[in-house]
Length: 317
Image 1 (tube, one colour):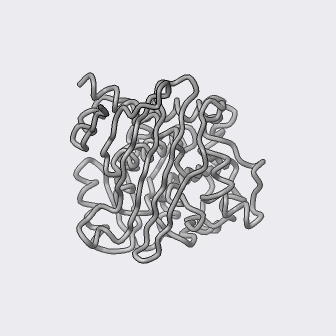
Image 2: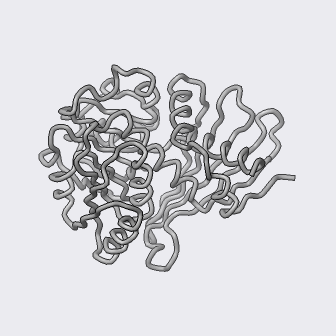
């Protein structure tokens, strides 16, 4: 009978795991062509606004395959509910038997997304980060900052959000774990002050323009994971020295690169996958003057890696 892991057990199993390292290994395997990832299944809702993603796949030669269902309903916080939910199903790659159900309630999706942001920063952010900028004061805005602690030493932060109450809560929460946080309702202030910026909103129109981006800035764009969403002006990608994606096939269909391809600002030939960047130092940031972009739409190999790690560690702990 399949094992059922509740969120408490999942969080316990996460302790001591190197999730950032697992994400790196997954990205490398993906870019080497060792991962089978079918197109993303999704449902987009208008009233209330939300989306549901179905991501699934397997690593050739591995023991398991994973199917993940994850949702984001952005008005949930006003109802006292998390904006994220979901679960992961682990099956045997040998027999098709259902091995485990991870009732992760969106938590593992958020963790693996934040860990991917840390991977991007490790290879693409300036060595000397004077200030970190976060666009989005929700769950992912918090987790991105937490995971960046392992990639860069900077603890000074400017966070942009849409409401004073959510910004005050963000400031309180993140200062409690050692960050120095300034809040703003003007996204331009983030670009003016910060040379490492993470965008993690459900915006459907650009929040930053090319004229606002200073030399030496790295941007990790996390929020644009459907064809409708967009956080960056395509001209930002056009002016960038390096544009990196987690999946080139997905970037043709969703994310900042998808919008930039449509606008004629860049072509797929201008883009390289993160797995290749991890393996090849020549593809990584070459100087603190470069403008670099990581457009991460979320790939099923991340779900495979984190689900497998949690499941195996839960059997030990």
